[in-house]
Image (cartoon, rainbow, N blue to C red):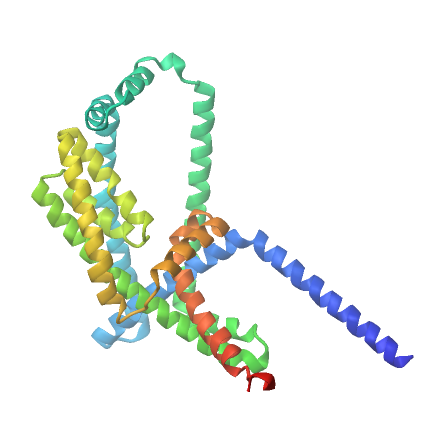
Length: 346
């Protein structure tokens, strides 16, 4: 009788544990947008702490002066990028909109079709536009921009908090694990941080190289906004596969306004740069940093974009870096490497 009662309690406890697991999975799925924001904060914090350690090692200062100097350097970099990108791109974008029919006509001469007439028809016949739909789209765009700005402020604020006291927050994360796993979890977290730092250094070197090559190539071709386009190419190089494609759109549009054939030269230049970066720079740099297989990179982008949306695409590589460390340390070493061969296979 007592044995049956104990078995019933055990079965009930298992069902309760299973229900709690399902509830936790559902809750995490509902909070996936917040979780990806928190991970973005962690990535920014790791990048900032890497800069702080570099300043501290180079200058021999204590952490707080190094932290303040690093913060000033980051603010200066943001100001330079904003000043270098926003005014020229906004002016050129207005010019591009004004000359859109001429650009479409030039594009029509290259690829054929009736693209120019369609665009000209829409521009010269505003009665065809649906003003209500346009106004609603503008409001939706403004709302999305406001939400994105709030999320960006949240990510940056949390990243700064993590950067000020990284050891304390790491200790909190470790204490959330069972006592017998805390030392192992602490080691895995340290390895994830080291892997992220190494990956960021490699990406920085690769992005600087791409930006310099774009600057030299666009200068030789005589394309306008050389510095801004080079900065854009270096920044978007952080996003593999998608970033290089986006970075070529604006310089091609700018070149199309001056000379239709110049846009093809810009496209050829970016193809050469990206192939050189993919097959020469990245293998050489990542060989000494963090090595990610191309198939794993593409799969991570697809999976995390489906789960987290555009933010998943931006953070696909750092997520893949951390996932690679977790799988290697917890699954392979702690589980698979400890399995013993069954006797029937001996």
